[in-house]
Length: 197
Image (spheres, rainbow, N blue to C red):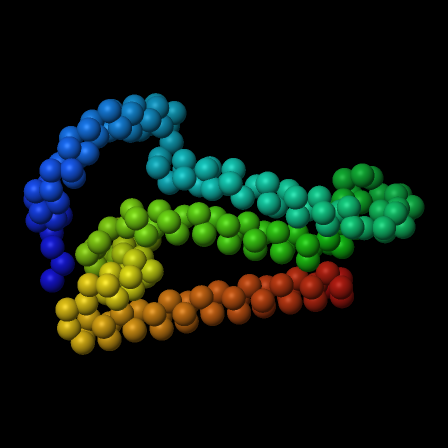
């Protein structure tokens, strides 16, 4: 059985070094409260702020992938739209972007991977331990990597170890499913772009 937060805190604060560091935290908590107040005054929820931060994090990757895709087009490909009388916007939407969609999709996939990589650290350190199964999308949850790590390092019985192996299989299955799903989307977009359907 995992220790409760109160039990862990009592045991940890018995160490003088941990206790000293713990009692030096109030300035950080004051700063945190001020930042939360600023966010609330702006009318933003924590989820909206997090989504905005992730958007700012991945936007450069998508922009650079789009720019590289457009730069890779030959001058003849760039002139297809204008030679047919299309405006700059129509040329971009109907000619240039479809030709670079594979490059853009690759950039989006890399950007989402970057966001997942950067948030994985938060999920591993800020996850709610012992939260059980979530009842909805906004409930607290225990991240699978955290659960695997905890069970591998702190198992107390063969059943705990078996649960850890089962969790590994679930995580690998989810990851494989996401890769297959991304591959199918890319194939479908390639098919649409090259066949014009």
